[in-house]
Length: 92
Image (cartoon, rainbow, N blue to C red):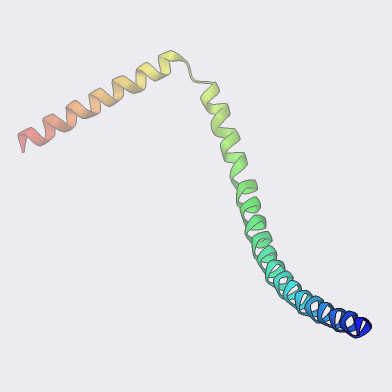
């Protein structure tokens, strides 16, 4: 009787392991598909980043060449432009 119970337990565990393997295989397929999609997005982002980096580096170099007098000049131009706009619309 004990051998029969052990045999039934072995069969039951074998059945459970087969079902578990099938579930794991299905999960692995879903995960592999998601990983492929994520890799595509990553590759696209890296490509866009590689395209944008030279412009960023050029902008950073340009900012490093600014002097305080340049910033003052831009502020003056802004005030001048705003005052001209106000004057232009006030005479209309």
